[in-house]
Amino acid sequence: MNMFELRVPFFLPLWRRVAVTLLSVGWAILELVTGNLFWAILFGAIGTIATWQFFLSGWPDEASDQESKE
Image 1 (tube, rainbow, N blue to C red):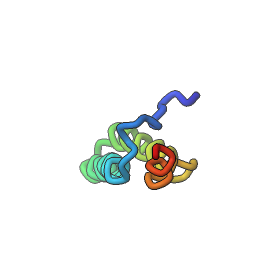
Image 2 (image 1 turned 180 degrees about the vertical axis):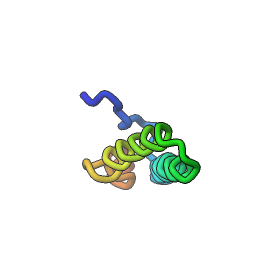
Image 3 (image 1 turned 120 degrees about the horizontal axis):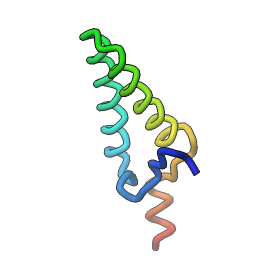
Image 4 (image 1 turned 135 degrees about the vertical axis):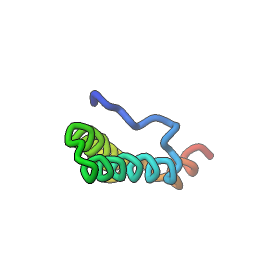
C-alpha cells in the first residue's frame, strides 16, 4: 500500500484527476516564480505523485469501470 493512496472512488471522473494534477503543478510553478522554493518543492512533489498514480501506474479507465458495474 502506498503512503498517499489516491485510488479512491472520488477520483474516478477524469476531470477531477486532471484538475488536481494541473492545480498542484501550476501552484508549484507559481511558488517557484515567486521565489518560495520550499512550497515549490512540496507542491511539485504532490503533482508528481498525482501524475504517477492517476496517469502512469495503470489507473482504471472510466468506461471499463462503468461496463463492469452493469
